[in-house]
Length: 134
Image (tube, rainbow, N blue to C red; front, top):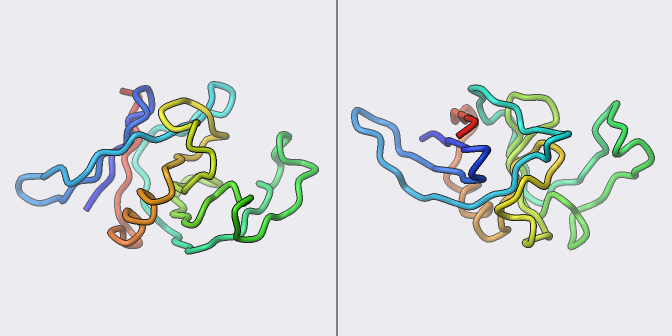
């Protein structure tokens, strides 16, 4: 399995990889704003958490006075977190459904909560994630 995130079109494509890759599902997502762009490159899923806590990213000006947020309806990560091998970047749910389809995050890839819960159940640690500019 592998994921391809198209940053400019705010889409995530989930593929079964083999001799002939097959698209399993496509999702509209939110990616990073211009001042906090989602990084481009080849990464992999290195961390998975159900009902995660949100912690302010170290050294981040936008979150410098923020406190950790426990699981629940006010958690900006929603109900699932899949951290990738880029520091402080992951694929996660969002309680802000209106942000989907836009460049609205601080670099993460946001998904609708039911969709990220489905994807979370499919993805294993080590799953490749390709983030491209298209």
